Length: 201
Image 1 (tube, one colour):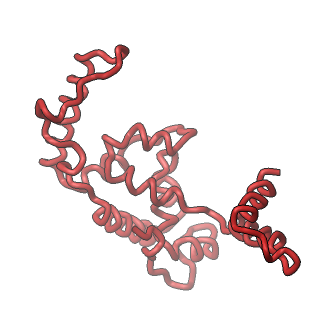
Image 2 (cartoon, one colour):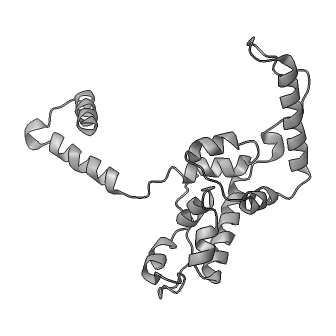
Image 3 (tube, one colour):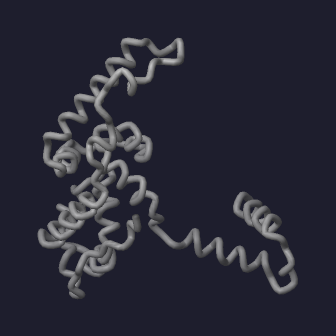
Protein backbone atom coordinates (compact mmCIF):
# COMPACT_ATOMS: atom_id res chain seq x y z
CA UNK A 1 0.00 0.00 0.00
CA UNK A 2 1.57 3.27 -1.07
CA UNK A 3 0.52 5.69 1.65
CA UNK A 4 1.80 8.69 -0.30
CA UNK A 5 -0.23 8.26 -3.48
CA UNK A 6 -3.40 9.96 -2.20
CA UNK A 7 -3.64 13.67 -2.91
CA UNK A 8 -6.08 16.36 -1.95
CA UNK A 9 -7.07 18.70 -4.76
CA UNK A 10 -6.16 22.22 -3.76
CA UNK A 11 -6.73 25.65 -5.23
CA UNK A 12 -3.54 27.64 -5.51
CA UNK A 13 -4.84 30.71 -3.68
CA UNK A 14 -4.24 29.15 -0.24
CA UNK A 15 -7.62 30.03 1.25
CA UNK A 16 -7.86 26.75 3.19
CA UNK A 17 -6.01 27.96 6.27
CA UNK A 18 -7.48 30.77 8.35
CA UNK A 19 -4.15 32.14 9.57
CA UNK A 20 -1.32 30.79 7.40
CA UNK A 21 -2.58 30.39 3.84
CA UNK A 22 0.81 29.72 2.22
CA UNK A 23 1.63 26.97 4.69
CA UNK A 24 -1.78 25.40 4.27
CA UNK A 25 -1.47 25.43 0.49
CA UNK A 26 1.71 23.41 0.78
CA UNK A 27 0.72 20.87 3.43
CA UNK A 28 -2.73 19.93 2.16
CA UNK A 29 -1.46 19.01 -1.28
CA UNK A 30 -1.21 15.49 0.11
CA UNK A 31 -3.77 13.66 2.20
CA UNK A 32 -0.94 12.00 4.13
CA UNK A 33 -0.56 15.11 6.29
CA UNK A 34 -4.26 15.16 7.17
CA UNK A 35 -4.37 11.42 7.83
CA UNK A 36 -1.29 11.51 10.07
CA UNK A 37 -2.91 14.26 12.15
CA UNK A 38 -6.15 12.29 12.39
CA UNK A 39 -4.28 9.14 13.47
CA UNK A 40 -2.60 10.97 16.33
CA UNK A 41 -4.84 10.39 19.39
CA UNK A 42 -3.48 13.63 20.85
CA UNK A 43 -4.76 15.69 17.90
CA UNK A 44 -7.29 13.87 15.68
CA UNK A 45 -9.36 16.59 13.93
CA UNK A 46 -8.97 19.29 16.60
CA UNK A 47 -6.26 21.23 14.76
CA UNK A 48 -7.75 21.19 11.28
CA UNK A 49 -11.25 22.03 12.53
CA UNK A 50 -9.83 25.11 14.25
CA UNK A 51 -7.23 26.27 11.72
CA UNK A 52 -8.58 25.11 8.34
CA UNK A 53 -11.75 26.25 6.65
CA UNK A 54 -14.76 23.96 6.40
CA UNK A 55 -14.19 23.05 2.74
CA UNK A 56 -10.62 21.86 3.29
CA UNK A 57 -11.61 19.96 6.42
CA UNK A 58 -14.43 18.12 4.65
CA UNK A 59 -12.11 17.36 1.74
CA UNK A 60 -9.61 15.85 4.15
CA UNK A 61 -12.27 13.78 5.91
CA UNK A 62 -13.47 12.46 2.55
CA UNK A 63 -9.96 11.31 1.69
CA UNK A 64 -9.56 9.79 5.15
CA UNK A 65 -12.73 7.77 4.63
CA UNK A 66 -11.60 6.70 1.15
CA UNK A 67 -8.26 5.44 2.49
CA UNK A 68 -10.08 3.75 5.39
CA UNK A 69 -12.20 1.86 2.86
CA UNK A 70 -9.06 0.66 1.07
CA UNK A 71 -7.54 -0.57 4.33
CA UNK A 72 -10.78 -1.98 5.75
CA UNK A 73 -10.28 -5.40 7.32
CA UNK A 74 -13.39 -7.63 7.45
CA UNK A 75 -14.13 -8.95 10.95
CA UNK A 76 -13.66 -12.60 9.95
CA UNK A 77 -10.10 -11.75 8.86
CA UNK A 78 -9.25 -10.54 12.36
CA UNK A 79 -10.97 -12.75 14.88
CA UNK A 80 -12.43 -16.13 13.87
CA UNK A 81 -15.36 -17.70 15.64
CA UNK A 82 -14.18 -19.33 18.86
CA UNK A 83 -14.09 -23.14 18.79
CA UNK A 84 -12.25 -25.71 20.81
CA UNK A 85 -9.65 -25.94 18.03
CA UNK A 86 -8.98 -22.20 17.75
CA UNK A 87 -8.61 -21.32 21.43
CA UNK A 88 -5.01 -21.61 22.57
CA UNK A 89 -4.54 -23.18 25.96
CA UNK A 90 -2.20 -21.21 28.24
CA UNK A 91 1.35 -22.48 28.17
CA UNK A 92 2.70 -20.37 31.03
CA UNK A 93 2.08 -20.95 34.71
CA UNK A 94 1.53 -17.21 35.14
CA UNK A 95 -1.53 -17.21 32.81
CA UNK A 96 -4.70 -18.61 34.27
CA UNK A 97 -6.96 -20.81 32.18
CA UNK A 98 -10.05 -18.76 33.06
CA UNK A 99 -8.41 -15.55 31.88
CA UNK A 100 -7.49 -17.07 28.50
CA UNK A 101 -11.02 -18.37 27.98
CA UNK A 102 -12.55 -15.05 29.02
CA UNK A 103 -10.30 -13.10 26.63
CA UNK A 104 -11.25 -15.35 23.71
CA UNK A 105 -14.94 -14.89 24.54
CA UNK A 106 -14.63 -11.09 24.67
CA UNK A 107 -12.75 -10.99 21.37
CA UNK A 108 -15.40 -13.17 19.74
CA UNK A 109 -18.10 -10.77 20.98
CA UNK A 110 -16.19 -7.81 19.52
CA UNK A 111 -15.94 -9.60 16.17
CA UNK A 112 -19.66 -10.34 16.22
CA UNK A 113 -20.48 -6.70 16.99
CA UNK A 114 -18.27 -5.59 14.09
CA UNK A 115 -20.09 -7.91 11.66
CA UNK A 116 -23.39 -6.18 12.39
CA UNK A 117 -22.03 -2.63 12.41
CA UNK A 118 -21.31 -0.08 9.72
CA UNK A 119 -17.67 -0.36 8.52
CA UNK A 120 -17.23 3.38 9.14
CA UNK A 121 -18.41 2.97 12.73
CA UNK A 122 -14.84 2.17 13.78
CA UNK A 123 -13.63 5.45 12.30
CA UNK A 124 -16.52 7.38 13.80
CA UNK A 125 -15.99 5.94 17.27
CA UNK A 126 -12.29 6.80 17.16
CA UNK A 127 -12.84 10.39 16.04
CA UNK A 128 -15.68 10.91 18.55
CA UNK A 129 -13.63 9.64 21.49
CA UNK A 130 -11.99 12.31 23.70
CA UNK A 131 -8.45 13.42 22.94
CA UNK A 132 -5.81 11.67 25.00
CA UNK A 133 -2.42 12.61 26.40
CA UNK A 134 -0.28 9.96 24.72
CA UNK A 135 3.51 9.92 24.86
CA UNK A 136 4.15 6.80 22.78
CA UNK A 137 1.71 6.77 19.86
CA UNK A 138 3.05 3.52 18.40
CA UNK A 139 2.46 1.72 21.71
CA UNK A 140 -1.01 3.27 21.96
CA UNK A 141 -2.02 1.85 18.60
CA UNK A 142 -0.58 -1.51 19.58
CA UNK A 143 -2.77 -1.55 22.67
CA UNK A 144 -5.86 -0.54 20.66
CA UNK A 145 -5.40 -2.76 17.60
CA UNK A 146 -8.34 -4.98 18.60
CA UNK A 147 -10.62 -1.99 19.17
CA UNK A 148 -9.49 -0.21 15.97
CA UNK A 149 -8.06 -2.94 13.68
CA UNK A 150 -8.31 -1.02 10.40
CA UNK A 151 -7.06 2.26 11.83
CA UNK A 152 -4.15 0.55 13.57
CA UNK A 153 -3.14 -0.92 10.20
CA UNK A 154 -3.29 2.55 8.67
CA UNK A 155 -1.27 3.97 11.57
CA UNK A 156 1.56 1.50 10.94
CA UNK A 157 1.88 2.77 7.37
CA UNK A 158 1.17 6.49 7.72
CA UNK A 159 2.84 7.32 11.02
CA UNK A 160 6.09 5.82 9.71
CA UNK A 161 6.32 8.54 7.03
CA UNK A 162 9.16 10.93 7.77
CA UNK A 163 8.06 14.49 8.34
CA UNK A 164 11.28 15.76 6.78
CA UNK A 165 13.66 14.63 4.05
CA UNK A 166 16.68 16.00 5.94
CA UNK A 167 17.80 12.68 7.51
CA UNK A 168 17.81 10.83 4.20
CA UNK A 169 19.58 13.70 2.41
CA UNK A 170 22.20 13.75 5.16
CA UNK A 171 22.75 10.02 4.71
CA UNK A 172 23.32 10.43 0.96
CA UNK A 173 25.76 13.28 1.55
CA UNK A 174 27.64 11.23 4.12
CA UNK A 175 27.79 8.30 1.72
CA UNK A 176 29.32 10.52 -0.93
CA UNK A 177 32.11 11.46 1.47
CA UNK A 178 32.78 7.80 2.26
CA UNK A 179 32.79 6.44 -1.31
CA UNK A 180 35.08 8.95 -3.01
CA UNK A 181 37.17 8.54 -6.16
CA UNK A 182 40.09 7.44 -3.95
CA UNK A 183 37.96 4.96 -1.99
CA UNK A 184 35.93 3.36 -4.74
CA UNK A 185 36.97 -0.24 -4.03
CA UNK A 186 35.28 -0.55 -0.64
CA UNK A 187 33.16 -3.65 -0.30
CA UNK A 188 29.49 -3.27 0.53
CA UNK A 189 30.04 -4.66 4.04
CA UNK A 190 32.84 -2.19 4.80
CA UNK A 191 30.87 0.72 3.37
CA UNK A 192 27.85 -0.20 5.50
CA UNK A 193 29.99 -0.52 8.62
CA UNK A 194 31.60 2.87 8.03
CA UNK A 195 28.21 4.55 7.53
CA UNK A 196 26.86 3.00 10.74
CA UNK A 197 29.92 4.18 12.67
CA UNK A 198 29.62 7.70 11.25
CA UNK A 199 25.92 7.92 12.10
CA UNK A 200 26.57 6.65 15.63
CA UNK A 201 29.29 9.16 16.46
